[in-house]
Image (cartoon, rainbow, N blue to C red):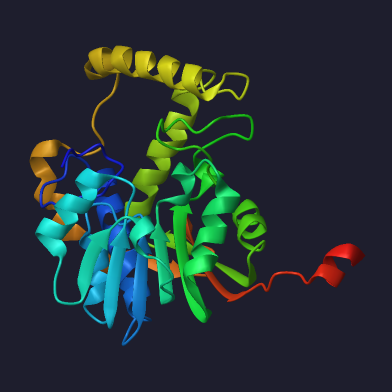
Length: 282
């Protein structure tokens, strides 16, 4: 399975502390949600390589990972399927309902956001819980910028995430994913730098396809010249320095005001469809 940087694949070597931070952040999000899956049926929407579904399955009754990418599904089934875990496409779910639905680092890739949220609600039991994580736009973009990540369609603030998810759920709570140690600061500095580097090519005046072409061209130029102008945050030959210094315990998920790179939404209480009379009154 090709490593594009968007579908997280477990590995032991990291090129930078920022890459290592994102690795720990991905793991911590799944481990956090897994604490609520004991004896539950779980759907992992956008399961990617499958490592996260496997984490959820360690305490869950059953776990199903779904993805739109056939290669990812094949990889996940080969590496992480078990007696209570399998991977498939969402079309094979039929009328199944789940106690817990997770969808981590997916929503920013979605074109039809309303349909995405409705689909989550469709497969959730009435008393179920939903966990959705996504990058926090705060340090990543100016308000007049498209996402500089070519795979991202839309990025979210706390306010915009609540507004979207509240269309289907009565309760939406937002948690910060970050750290009280300085490991988080490296990733924040990286995204802030990219916010400036990609300006003005990521302005909203450019259609998405043109924006991506411009940024790809810029990236090729940057790769050729970065050795002259930029130095790595930490020497790649010293990988063990930061893997020994920091661990998954340095990543926290909290409502406290901390250095944060990502958001976690916890949703419950599905909204019931309006009756014919209620629709008329509206």
